[in-house]
Length: 363
Image (cartoon, rainbow, N blue to C red):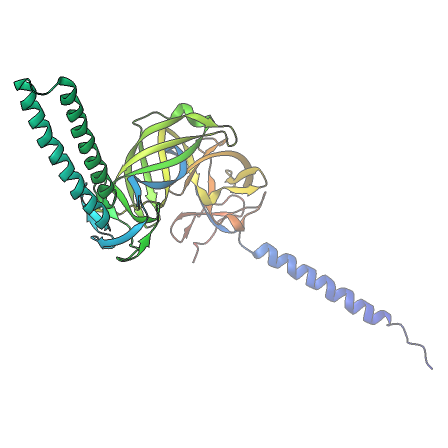
C-alpha cells in the first residue's frame, strides 16, 4: 500500500492564482453593473373620504309567511310561483262545506228571529205584549246574528288572502293536500324598498345620524352602488359585541336587490386632503411601514412613515417632507444605501446620477 502524495508547491500556486483571478473578475463585474432603474414621485395632496364600512343583510320592506289557520283540505290554489299580487287578493281556499251549511242554518235562524221580533214589537205597540217579552226577542235576534258572524269568520279563516301587495315565493303545496294548523302555504314579500341591517362599533356611534346618506354594494352589481339613507339607529348597544344595529332604507328599482342578499355599506363621515403616495411604494415589516426615498446623490434611504386611508391606488402617508422623492416603481430592486437611476419618463433614465456618474438612456 502506498501513501497519497501531497500536492506540490506548483499546483498550490496555480490554485491560488485562479482564485484571486475569479475574485477580481467578480469585483470588476459588480463595479460594471449599473444601478437599478426606478421611478420616483413626490407625495401629492389627495382628497380622502373618511368612511364607516360595514356588511349587512337585505330584508324586504314587508314580508310574511301565510299559514293555514285550521286543519283542512286545500280546495283551490289561485297563485303561481313568483306571482305579483295585490293587497286582499285571494290566494288559496280551504274546504268549508260544513261551515257553508252551518252558515245557511244560521241565516235562517237570524231571519226567523228578525220576523219574530217584528211581530212582538207590533203586539207591544198594541199593548198585547210586555216589554220583557220584547227584550227577550231582541236578545234572541242578537244571538242568532252572532252565531252567523262566527260561522262567517270560520269560512273567512279558510280563505287565504294577501295582506299587502308584493311578490310570492315558490309554491310548495298543491290543491287537494290536507294541511294542519300552522302549515306554511306561501310567503309574500314587498320588495319595492329594502331594509338593510348592519352593525357599527360603538366607537363610531357619534358619527351616525338618521337621514345620513349611505352607499350599498351588492356582489351581483359591484359597479352600481345603491344610494339610500340611515332610517333607524337601535337605542340599545349589544353588550357582547359592543356594536349597535343600524337600519337603512334603500330604493329597489327593477327589484334587483333580493331579501337575504349580503351588501357592503359605506357611510361617508367627512373629507380631508392629505399627502399620498402610490400604494406599491409602501413596504411593511411587521407593524412598521416604510418607503424608500432618493436623496440628491441618487442614493436610496429607508424612511419610516405612518399610513392612513387608501383610495384609488393611493395611500395616505405622514412623516415625509413635501419635496421627498419616493421610489414608486422598482421598489424590489433597491436597498438601503445603494445608488439608483431615476426615470424621467416612460423608458428613459436621468442623465444625471451623482452616485454613479453619467448614465446612458435605458434601453
